[in-house]
Each structure stands twice: as C-alpha cells, then as structure tokens.
Length: 79
Image 1 (cartoon, rainbow, N blue to C red):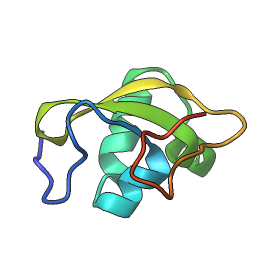
Image 2: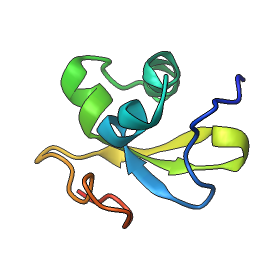
Image 3: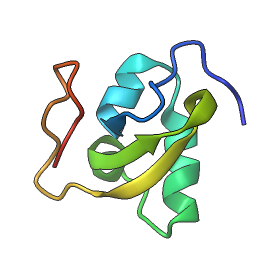
C-alpha cells in the first residue's frame, strides 16, 4: 500500500468525496470497494464511508444511499 502525503487521520471516518479532496485516493477507494463486492461507479466512490487506519489505509464501512454529510467540516463524516 502506498502511504499518501495527505492521508486521512487515523481513527477518522471519511466519505469517499472527503478522501478525494484530501489526496490521490481514487484508485485506492476503487480497490477497497472491489474487495468488498461493491460497485465502483462515481456515486459509490463519493458516497461510501470508510474508517481511516494506520498510514492512510482505509476500511469500507458502508454506502450512504442518501449521500454523505459532514464533508465540509473537520468533524467525522456521516450518512
């Protein structure tokens, strides 16, 4: 796994759109979605929610069918 310069903060909860705003997470999000049997269309990339682990790794939590909230603040994102 590649450690990203602008990676997420360990213990944080991020929607895909927030990760994309932080750095080059697109391919990593696609890999994690595929590993979890999820679609990889733009909506799933933007509106899936992830836990941030060590070194900028992300773990799939779920898909926010109604979109993500909190993406414009420092607080954790939410569905």
